[in-house]
Length: 211
Image (tube, rainbow, N blue to C red; front, side, top):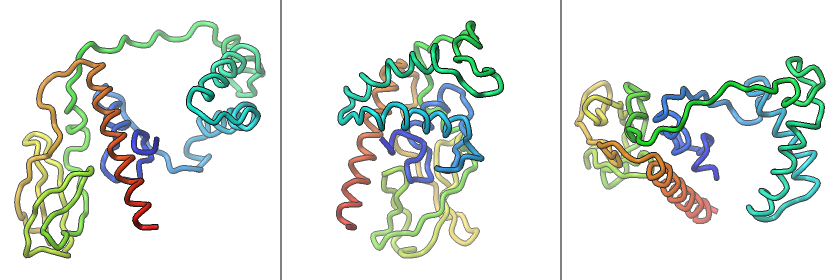
């Protein structure tokens, strides 16, 4: 689902990106179809497509899971891997012992991602009603700035957008959608899934109307 993934088509962090930022993982977004920027992932996706998905052509999510699970075992334990680190051996043979991953937290700060983008600026054009839209939410700026360009700068400590117009501070807007309290990890994941679904439905509806 594009709205859940990093390639959401929006400049504001997508739910998927926010998920990793909340966990303290630094996210690097590579342009699509750029093998030179994302070689390892692109190579695996190509192998998965050619040797599994294009062979079985699954039509549902359940069917995808049914064919990819055995392929994953085959890829890791049987299929020779030509990467230099594997030496033409299956990954599980070349690396029988992997580093232990840290345990998932029981609770998280669901707004931690905001501090990662502190100071980042987002350009918008004010709509005729005086609003701008960011992250699927509307913010009222000013009616007299209709059809003019403004910049919204993230101020993480105050949890606001500082609105600039031609290097002049216009107003501050409280950032919507923040939780402002710790949250159980499972509930946090569920919330991001719901946000992703909402973004997907909204973008799909807009494409249909535009088409």
